[in-house]
Image 1 (cartoon, one colour):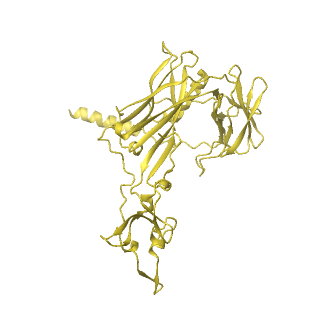
Image 2 (cartoon, rainbow, N blue to C red):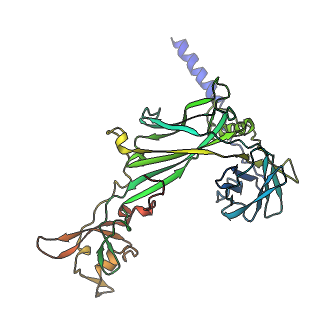
Image 3 (cartoon, rainbow, N blue to C red):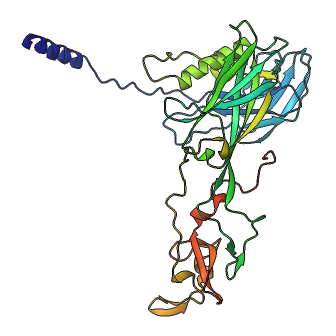
Length: 408
């Protein structure tokens, strides 16, 4: 027994002694690489191309958009369609309605005079999305909601797919304000045009979602996972909606996004795929060896939206409350009339409405509150107001109080 213990200690010592700290130096490259994102939309929807440059990890900024570039979509039949810059490295064209019998490429000339061309690509239009479904099975991280996409192509032209999505959901502020201040007067709030209790928040997908039926006997994709939402997520607290957009890809485009996904989302353990070079289809005209990040496809995507209400989810699911630390403030500052305050060893009357319950102006202590309800004794006049901090009452600090056009 003692011999076995000794051998174990010796083995542990040898393994530990073999470890050596390795701090690889950060790569230092002159300049930066061009990054091109987007799809040439062949239908009647807009084509949006985003052009930027990579930045070093040591730099303070994470965004370096390419401004003032000249961008066009060129067809193999000697036609060209210009895109207009709308700021922040985004270039847009209205619906191009391209002829699917021809091939197209992206032509970029940067503000520095460098020209980049993508390969000519076939137009691959997406078939309709059959349905968006969900279940409540959760995941390894706990209970939650899983969302899936279902599709097929009866023409058997599209077998490779990519999806992205936008989520929108309702939130409620911590307290509902029935009154507002004009600076010297408190009025009843117009709950239709000046609502600050109900707002809509949105975000877009940040992961690469892919699927293929190439190895299946039928060109049908059933329940391809799109995203998962934890049962405690705030976005499931009132009402939630997701729109999924589907792109049909060529095999080459599918391979590009597969490698990009492996390199950006599936690294971190010895069991994950090892990093590999990502080869796109965009090249520098003057220097074909220059790395350029991006892959341009052409086609018309399809989309579908679903809504999920709180009543469709288990009653025991309790979303996290963003406003859990909020409290109503009720003190002499919000009473009418108020009081005299000592300022510079003298006394001056402070208009308590202007100083403490002003939608636009915090008080001299940096405190800003919004009136909720009046303080009234039975049969008497309004003596003041119950108020709460603006961050607990005004949901427009986080989202918009205008319902999206698509909201049911």
